[in-house]
Image 1: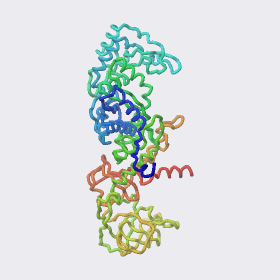
Image 2 (image 1 turned 60 degrees about the vertical axis):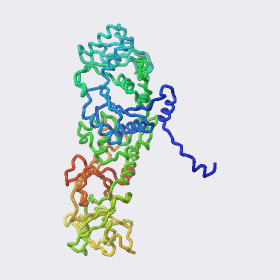
Image 3 (image 1 turned 90 degrees about the vertical axis):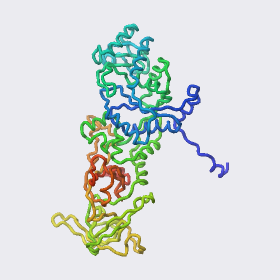
Image 4 (image 1 turned 135 degrees about the horizontal axis):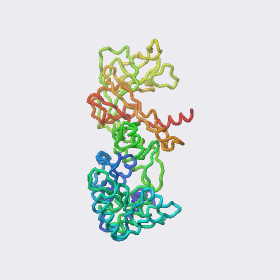
Length: 569
């Protein structure tokens, strides 16, 4: 094949292992004439986190790619831990990520059907009512190396089981006193097949069904049958459900109902992050964070409030792909996807986080000029804006050094620097606080022939940003950093918990000087503070004319540098 032929050859798409299995499955007679049907089935017992985003993107993405459907189904089988608040937040998160479900269902929609199917298994001699306590049930179950023992109630008659199960539903028995169990094999190597519990007695008010039920189905009983009712073709689950697949199959086969195929993939593990809902709830309840949407939290609502874009999260999920084996993804990959997108969409603005006053001694005292600034060099259609320029300015304290090394190319005594969109200035005098010796003001001169845009032969090596002291606005800025110091926060050591790995500097609140246009921007606006990082106007604490800015991410991965420096020290 010559070069021209190679160039014209169509690019071959690489399929992940799930896509490969789906394409093989649709060659089978069982799926002829059908379209792909997936679902995203969260339990409404907490807010979704970045790990759920991977599952959302996968399930909705597969449906889109193959022209199929994807349902949103709430696994609301444990009313003691579920709330409408979580239902609402999950729907908001899915839509924010850019997806819309084809149908919205709840496992509770199927409670009547699940009950009838349970009666069917009892009549077929494949389910029985058991009186063992939870502790006894665990003891009878056996171990990975030893078979379990059969419950003494396993051989009750069909009539007795039907009577007891109907009385369980009627509320005759105390909570936890009886269960309905599938009759499978107490010696099965897979412990999920050792007569698993299908129903337990539980008096808890359900957020949708109220007090209609006092027995509730277990996840393994409700999950596969819900998939079947909805005509799901492929149940895409994370790897922890691989051992549950034989039970998923057993229920569908023994009921003689539509049997979806379950395929498992590795869930997302992210460095410097905890993904356990229980641990995230602990952070909220113990007030280590301000709430589920705290911008340091790995929840989707936390990412949204901090200023992440849905495009960056979708791109991240696409970039890491799906795998069959567990691995930990460096959080820097997520931050890299975020920077890539913000670089394209975020307008540039001027903000000084740690101000130092500069006085241009030869600039007319009452004069104000308007400097034309580019909003976004990545987007010509973003246009320009006017920045006020006056005799007194603020620059970053780190952009001035009194005793500067030779290669310090910012402002220093006798040195010159260009002000972004402005003039070249030269430092003439340093004013210090007489008691502390701290530099409080720098006096400079400006060259009026060096305004930005003029043809100037003179070059300087440094350019710094600034704001006009006369026009600058004071705003609160929250500098967020990683919530945990350890790459794996859950490895805290003996006698410690993941809480001990929290970063005490994960939030620093400062007051900054910003260009005047920023106080009029709406909540949720994302901008780049030139040379400082990307920031978003907080959607909760901002007030009209008083924005609060959250740092979304720094311009570069400064964390890696800090870690390397710490190890060197």
